Image 1: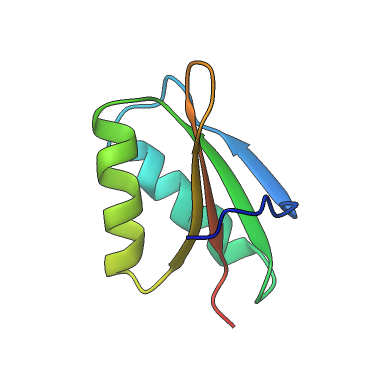
Image 2: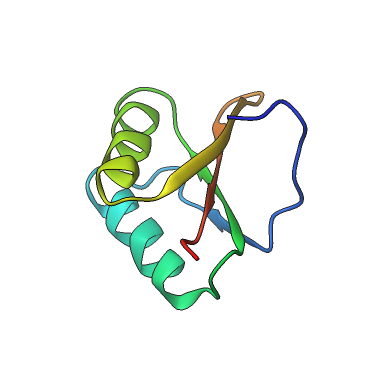
Length: 81
């Protein structure tokens, strides 16, 4: 994870989306993106932010940053090259 904020190429608001649907939607979006692009996903606290990053790592994706915002988390993940 980095501390500098990177500008995402694509954003996905999954607040209010339950597990595992939020992971499935994130993975589908990443598969539609060009290699090297950065996706920012907005996730709720609790199970979503605990499960989605781990699941993405297990699928081979690189988590670049997780920011805690006012009432959600912003997860940045890069599409594999």
